[in-house]
Length: 282
Length: 299
Image 1: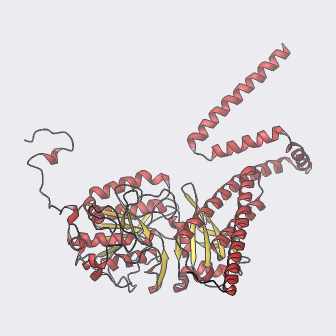
Image 2: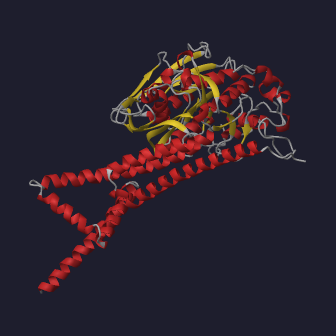
Image 3: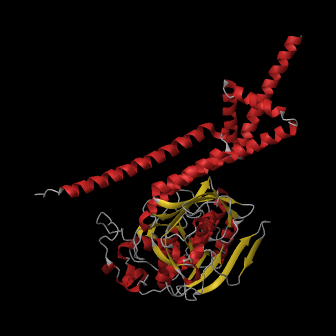
């Protein structure tokens, strides 16, 4: 027969259960917020602004830290021209001021992951300070445990997502590696969308600056944008732009096909307009 | 004068058919028969990676040859046979694991990972081609490429290795992505399991990953004579590489498919007709692997 538990022990167990549930709720809140943010980015696509992109990446790292109980986290992007990794996000007690800094490829955990596209977990980083010098500089101390996974966009490694020091000093395990991989996938998609948007933005800005010598065009463009954003035509055009953007990124064959199809449609429409004008005039 | 025969059939003409040594029936293959008492002596093992630190105590000067490949920004490949160091520590870790199983094997450090990402795939392919052309017995590939552009090149190299009896042991990528050459049938692809016994490996009847070996929280040699505890499929592959070196040192001339058959027969989850395999640390105990237990180097 099972003996009855003392009241104190039962209360302690209940307190533990409440703490556990509270943590789960907090996890769920963060994950829910992340999901909503990603859905928002997916919906707006090329219409996002750069600050949104930075905030989203930070949120992804923050959520990964929270879910995997890590004390610090970083997200690096590969700069292929400079053969370096650039800190895009650095979170942790002593990580301030690191965003934008570079570390050369070919050293440390992040360099290894970028070079190979392979994830890695390290349980006793302090055994070799040189291996950890990149993140050591980042957080101002030598971490004990570390997990790093690649950001893969299609078949390219575009960056690295890295967590440091799991709570309780335990090593990151294989399940943690798989979980962080999911966050890395989301980050890669967000980065890809942002890059497309930045390219379009630069193009539009360059076109405007060439034309807009006295600034009046910018003012008119802003007023027009405010007006047209609400219109069905604008929404259709934005959707068309999204589709074209997607096709442009899908490879040569798809791009050529889309060019031919759209050229044919444009030609047909031009012909229709020409005939319409001829009919009116004749 | 020989009568004309269809292409590829000449080697099966009565006067051309060669006698080759028989192997025991599968049920009779035991670890003792497969590698008992073997040390990997006489077997050339290439580690295509970030380089091997020959001065590390775990390597003990066993590196017999070096070569490095780097492609510059202009697409020019640079080849250097001078002794080199390890850029990351990863190649030294793999060599350490291989030596725990096959301490007397001859290591060849094929360095294809350096500070440049540019040209990494072509450097990797050049290093692998070199290892095949040099007739290494086993090549450890704890790396791969995710680039679709390299599919054909690595497929060709994997087949070339298979036909030349060069055993390629590859690590599956830790991420659920397509990675070459680990997904090709001509290689032996490995992922990690939780065990720590270097002789504990499992067969997966649902490829492409065919074997599981230790790779979680494994203490390995690293930079500057140090050690680290690491997790990843990268560290599972060298366990199988070491075993293959042992098998080949005891049974010279075996082909990759024969070695795979032996690995399958000696995997801990393969049983002769009893209908099921054990979990980790299951029914096959150290007593079932007398030579293996005796030969295991301390970790």
